[in-house]
Image (cartoon, rainbow, N blue to C red; front, top):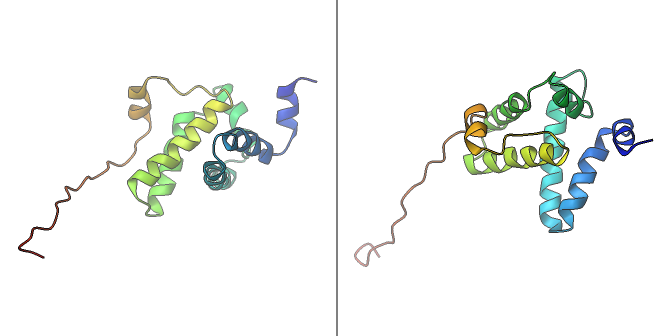
Length: 135
């Protein structure tokens, strides 16, 4: 039995734990944060799609589901929960990396990703030091 067959026969938590385990080799706190992000993504997919989370990668690989569309749905879901734009972008990139880890091709060209996945703009504010007169 090949590894890919074993992977699809296991529950969807295996997909997450495999990725998080590899991330934890670099940094355990990052792995913990990624795990939390992936659990939210998993719940969203399971609520939205009948094939569930473990079927996502096979549907995308067979071109029956668009990875960019899935990332857009996730980004929209996050934006409805009123999180900062930087946090939203970090969470979407986590899912993008997770999909790429499981051999789902997301274009290596950043332009294609930016065209297909709509993320809110980050508003940067200029911070100025308080003057002596204000103090």
